[in-house]
Each structure stands twice: as structure tokens, then as C-alpha cells.
Length: 192
Image (cartoon, rainbow, N blue to C red; front, side, top):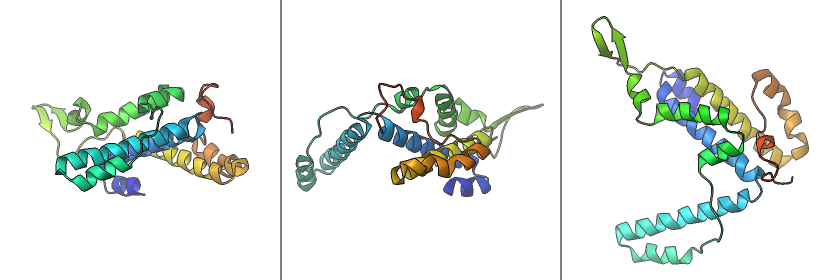
């Protein structure tokens, strides 16, 4: 909803940051749920991040109560989450990686960010007051894919036998994937 409101208000670049976040969350959720050991790795990562947050805050604020909280948080053994690029590679990579990089170029301070505000004219290079937005449709489509992936995962957790049936018509009509776990290598896929 926020993505669409920003887009309709002409704030396409701001909406692209939300599109990228939606993509990260939806794909990560699929990886966590459908990958063998994914849920355990997610718990390890959450716990490590939580503990690290308290450690940094306790040190910064020189707060003994926060330091005590750090000591109360037990460490979970095992590996945390892989980098997001590895998660995309596990799902076959090329389309997801290209789409993600495209959104990342718009969100991070790169040449792409600067070039959207420059325009060549007869007088040379001029600074635009608004960015030229080449990613508007791809960002919209990736947000739609991310929404479908998130919805399908929720529906699958509610009733695995009906999830695909419920979403199949919309998936076909809008050309949006319902699931991406079939792309996981057989040895990584969790038995469901």
C-alpha cells in the first residue's frame, strides 16, 4: 500500500526503496521456510543480531543494565543466514539478481542515482529538479511478485493443499510466480 501511495504521489524513487525491501523480505521468507535448516539459521541470525544490538548499545551508553541483558541472551549454536545474494543464487539467481541489482542502483548512492537528475541539452548538461524514472514499471512488477510470494507463503502455512489452487488464477492472469522453492537445488529443499 505504501509503495502504491508513493508511486501515485510521483515519488517513484522513494517507492523503489520499498520495492527492494519487499523483494528482500519475500524471497528471504521463502528461503527460510523451504530450505532445509533455513528456520534454524534464521533463529541463529535473529538471536545474534539481537545480542549484538544490546552489546553495542550497552557499550555506547556505558549502561550496566543493558550489559546484564546481553549476558542473559543465550547464544544459539550454528550458522546464521547467508548473504541475500547467496539466497537469490539458491533460487536460480539470474532474474532475481538482475532485478535486485536494478533496484539497488536506484536506492544506493551510485552513478545511476546521480544520472537520473542530469539531462543533456544543447547547452550541455543540466540538472533536473525531478529524477527521470526508468525503473517505475520494473519496481511495480517486482513489488507485485514480492506480494504474491508473501501471500502464497502465508496461504501455504494455513493450508498447503489449497495455497496454489487459491492463487493460481491470479498468478496466471498477472504472470506472477506463486512459489519459487522449486528452483532450490534438491539437496537444499526441505521435505514438506
